[in-house]
Length: 70
Image 1 (tube, one colour):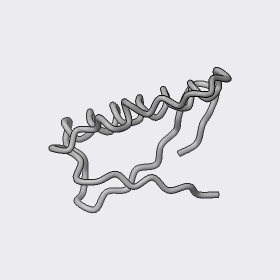
Image 2 (cartoon, helix red, strand yellow):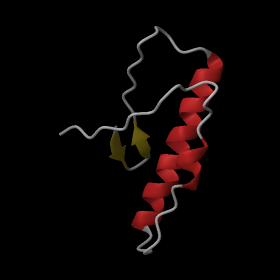
Image 3 (cartoon, one colour):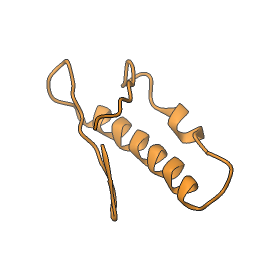
Image 4 (cartoon, rainbow, N blue to C red):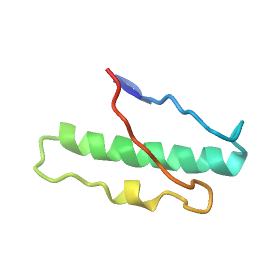
């Protein structure tokens, strides 16, 4: 995942093949939550809003593992 002027660029790896439309929607919602959290940091506030990150659809996504790569 990289952050660019227009938003986030995300690399997604799956263990079960291609995503179906419901899984893709769940990933999109998760990335929107991450964008919201990062936007809050850019606003210079002292509060980090991760509430939308915690709302990912557990019926579609078994787990979420966020790793930083250099």
